[in-house]
Length: 146
Image (cartoon, rainbow, N blue to C red):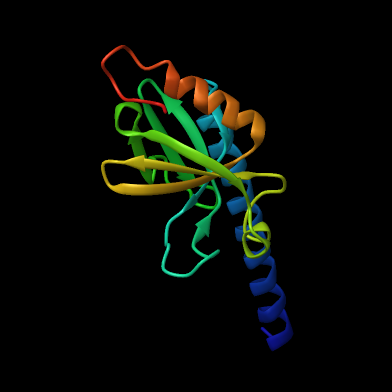
């Protein structure tokens, strides 16, 4: 087989793999949001440099837990999980100039405290309203949602 046919076959296989990956991402997102309570949620994984370390993802409420899934991963299990009783709302702020490129459009940055220390997340204002309601809906004696 001539070299150009090998290159064409390789390009076709590569294109097919990219399309299958995209289809798998769409199917995974539909499966995650099947039970509702799924929203765009970015998590700041690294805080060593200001404005850096943001990872796009999806958040999902699962009872008293907030599960976080990476957006471009095919993993069926959440990458992070926070218990409602361990989270306390500290405040919100607008995304800085360096952060706006790394986050979804119009998302606000939310600062929380947890058992592991300070956590920063970014979500839309409407998702923030639902998140605050979820935090405040904790049973008496559970966590505090200042």
